[in-house]
Length: 597
Image 1 (cartoon, rainbow, N blue to C red):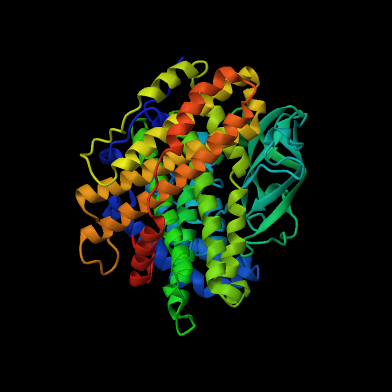
Image 2: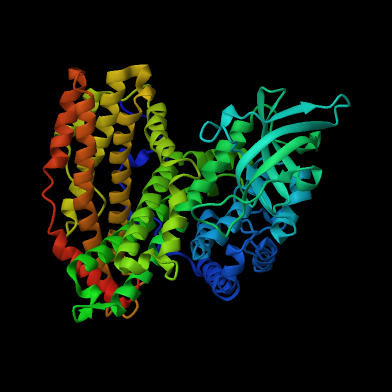
């Protein structure tokens, strides 16, 4: 049976073509959204960066002072409803602010924890009384929020938590006992969303004030983000009023997983900001560092690194803002007062959010690693900025759900959305009849990339179908195979997002051009090169992943035929001269002394 997917979100991009006119890109940010971004950028430059040493020295009083200043600029109230002291803004605006705050990842972690997982549980699951009591104080920075889900023995398996909640004989309070681990803002937060099992069984969320008896352990000595507070929390018979149950008893998993998904919606802009910062620092250094009588940016292998960082930044931005725009459109169709409806609309994009989480965090890992390489020995020194960026970036592949967990979310949610499984024969028929992707664009320089996109989509669909056919109900135990299928699907979304962004730029002209660019066409040409380079390399990566699926299914001959056909189409993609294209991309970035978009 063919897949039954939602009109938008939930992996629908695999079975329908993208019209670039429907794509939200960074170039489409409104003046109001850009104003919020500039406000955040100026705040970071003027208020936070001069006090970085205090943050790294764990001066949490200074962190709180800076968070209060951020509140005074409305940066803590973006997603809180207007009725409770907030601005009630869209996800694009909130994510764009996060992008600018990310110039210091440690402070971004403190602020992001407060505004996202520290506040949104109450926004979406709180009663009117709970919202009225806490949200205005969170909006103003009077209270700082945190989120306490992880425990020493339960990370990804959150439902294995050991923290308990037992009702007192009077029936007025729950007594919470247990320990939480890796709590950002743990050393100074005032308000925690704590997850515990009522009577040791019913997983439930609670709003817990520090004054109720929460104790923090010492700050963890971490690899990175060492300017943010991360501690354990100790709960020893902490009395929490029954009215502080958040959501429904026994349904804490709904709070936990929805809030983590909300975090993933916006996380990608912080990652893309990190890529851009690493690139800009690398360009500046490579222009002034001289070896063998010339600046090292003139050497081909250095230029290649700068070009690939540019490529990954462009693609990451395209993916993330596409999802943010789609989420906002979905949310607009729901009554803002209907929290359950809003969450359902956002949950429909869980696949895309997991794709962005994996792709942007791994792109960031590449960028900071190459930045250290560009700086050479100096990159290994704490006297230069990329050493800290390298350390700070490592956590992004772990928090908000590890990349391994997110790689499994992608195919398992897609298979769940199918009714009941993909029919490999349907996909085989499609694979033998597949034509060029119809993007609504006239023939042009990206025709080959549109055809490549059609072929890699077919490979992703067929890999899922073949795996499901081969293993049936036991498919969820085939983690390695599912992860390879996920890698193909990630490339589908990345190619299509970048392709749509470039097509939109070439048909409408660039609204945000490289500084000093002579014309829109100059910026557009760089975008076209980026898409062609990314697609050429992505087809090789997809072919590798597809080959692993084929080999894993070698004993299931009935599933192999359609998959072999789809894989052959991907392998046949001729590619381009990526060496010359990367030189042009690198030259553009070097000429502008920065990321050229």
